[in-house]
Length: 326
Ligand SMILES: NC(=O)c1ccc[n+]([C@@H]2O[C@H](COP(=O)([O-])OP(=O)(O)OC[C@H]3O[C@@H](n4cnc5c(N)ncnc54)[C@H](OP(=O)(O)O)[C@@H]3O)[C@@H](O)[C@H]2O)c1
Image 1 (spheres, rainbow, N blue to C red):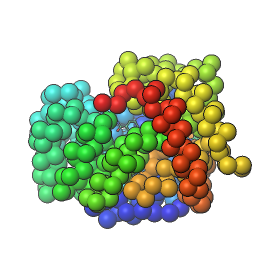
Image 2 (tube, rainbow, N blue to C red):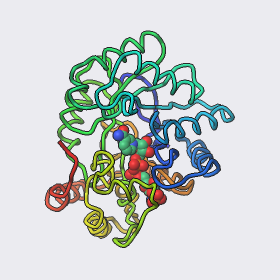
Image 3 (cartoon, rainbow, N blue to C red):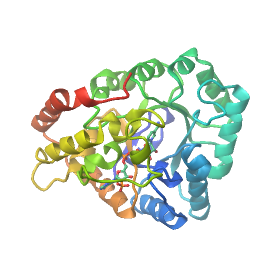
């Protein structure tokens, strides 16, 4: 495993992290045993950066992480998020309520202070008003959080937040189906020493190349109930591409992979080849996936010809289909 600096935090984070949304049940049912196996696989494969949120399974993801880490104490960085709980989102934000939610995360995770608290896709106008970021500075001073960042949905939000002098990181969607950040955000992030946390590296799994158009998902899986944005931003499910189109595009990408390289490897290696990226928080439904994803850290970079071909593929065939980008 290779490690990279996470912005101003100074943390050396594993370039492959683990996303823990699935531990709350939003990718279909996950029992305690499976949750523990996934977290154990993260530890066994030297992943030291874990990402969760207070709302994943209404606290269940954080609770499971807390239960696991209490019995398996090891040095790691656990990032969580605040701002999407129904008491706050979209316009109920007060300093006291945000602080209470962060305190809830501290309790569930079983830590003294949060390593990284991220504003969780709060509305653009709320982010830009600046109060939330000022409160995060205060919470950092008070010792409730060690560092803060933002998780964003739009380039506009990212380009606003990146200039904040105390911001440690920006979490953004970035994958073969969403490439604009490479030119529009990453230079500014590097200039401002802001770490980039990449979510949806596999576009909710479709960029693994394993899905078929007739595939169905569990009722409680967002890939069923949010595939067209019925519950939250459509961009968070399959990266905003209509599912059957995404399957076709993934099938075409398979043909572009070098011999002996899987689509998972191509998709993840392509992300890691961007030096602005600090860590890629891939989700996993099974421990075997964690192992497979971590192995990408040891692969050599893709050729510049392949990078160029993948860029052309995005601009010519993908970008027109992406929904949920403002
Ligand atoms: N707004 C936000 O801040 C926000 C929004 C979304 C996500 N996130 C964070 O980002 C993390 C990652 O995003 P994500 O889980 O939505 O998307 P993702 O990482 O692109 O997709 C994860 C899914 O891909 C499949 N997968 C993973 N590794 C695989 C492998 N080696 N081979 C085949 N399939 C594989 C699994 O699906 P199967 O179930 O099909 O096996 C897994 O559940 C989340 O856990 C969360 O921490 C944050």
